[in-house]
Image 1 (tube, rainbow, N blue to C red):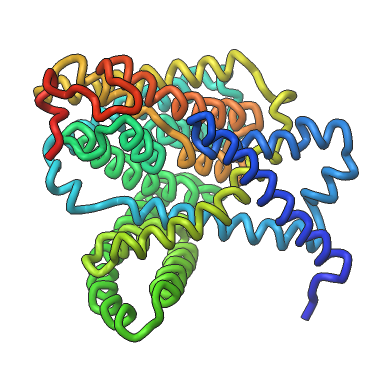
Image 2 (tube, rainbow, N blue to C red):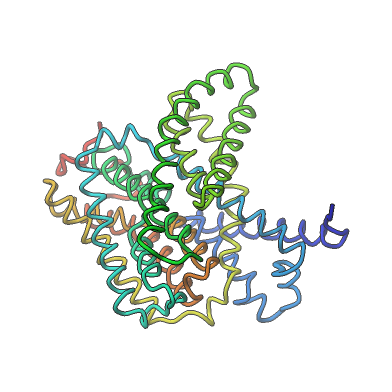
Length: 427
């Protein structure tokens, strides 16, 4: 059996430690100035990547982030595990009970936040691909489906954090935004899994229908039989295994098995891990403390590794094209904000609160970046559109909170005066 040589092992360990420490350092700095840590981790990647370090010190960059050889293969394995775990904890945050409580308003709001931006993205990719520089000209339909999905998906962790910072998390409005984002994430990753499974195949109606059938079957099985088994098994784990090691081990094991199962049936591994997260997170035996332990484990070790490497994938300065960035930004704001605004307004919310719903749902963050990274890796998009999508994810995440605060006239650092908005009063 082949193994890493002495020098290759040193290179791998130096790479991981450098990416982890610098990413964490930049992430902590951004948190100090009230910005998402993901922004700092991406900036760390840009500093360590071909944009800066690779430009001035190419040999040092190649040592830290090798692109070929056994060390590069091992590092790529770490990054793939990081993506799988990130989707797993995103699934943990999907609470089916919350969706059921808000089912009518959440369903219509999420549909407004999916259909309209999807139409905007699909239409732009089909009729104006020159403005997006598609990397998959031979598959315009797949590219259009991807770009529509990219504009439709939200970032559940970023939205939850934004609502907490604004002091409206435990309000009907906060629950509406959160539950709508959960539905968005679920449907978005389902569609993207179909797109990834169709890559490399002859695109026919039958192949797309088969991919959709496999995706739906896996989702149904995981949310029925899988959820039942977790409910039966978790109490025994909590009773007989040490805490929190037992529940952490079992949860991560289930995550990897779900990812492997999805990959085996022709669906991307990330959707399998996402579904396992939904099934485990919805179990009444998964405590908040256990959920928090898993979240800390992933976000402090694997998340920085992944998001730093995003900044190292391409030269952001060389591939930054302001026309593409502006086009993507305009489409993202128009589609998501207007779609959610109309759905909330027609559902009986005031115009001001409906705008807040639109801006709240517009945060893309980590999910958008994962989506763009997988699309780039699969050859579905080029580097310039990848950069535009990453920039869009960052700008929408950073502006979401301030725009909600401005629309609702909320006071920073306080519980806020909510008497003028009956929709905002806490439960």
